[in-house]
Image 1 (cartoon, helix red, strand yellow):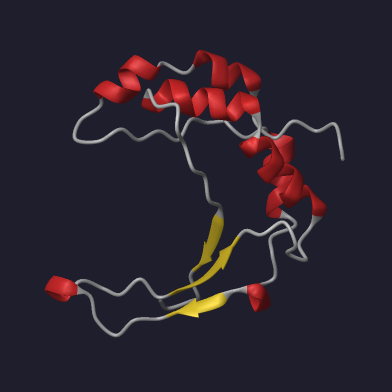
Image 2 (image 1 turned 120 degrees about the vertical axis):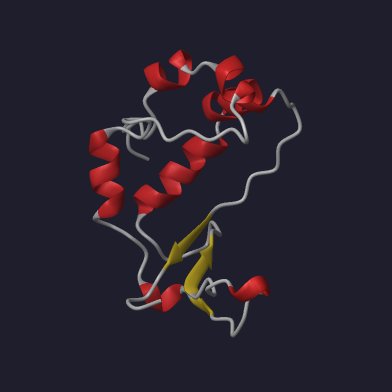
Length: 123
């Protein structure tokens, strides 16, 4: 396992959970640099191969909305993907990120799942 940190610990520590939970209509964040630039570049360069994904194509959605046609891959520790992705998921399962989520959502019981979605061109 590498010594690379995927998440920026300073961003985790600086997070304002009260402001996050007070956001209306729903809480949402996407802080710049939450994943370090080095880690982002590494993960982006080693994305899982689309051949591993399952096709999720639907004909219709309620109220005439456009379908969410996409390829999907649920994370499994046995997936044949770059080791960096396994390391990243291990970090997301680790105590620092779980502590961050507990603060953000004011919950102690959390179940995490990880997956990718690719959207083919013209979908």
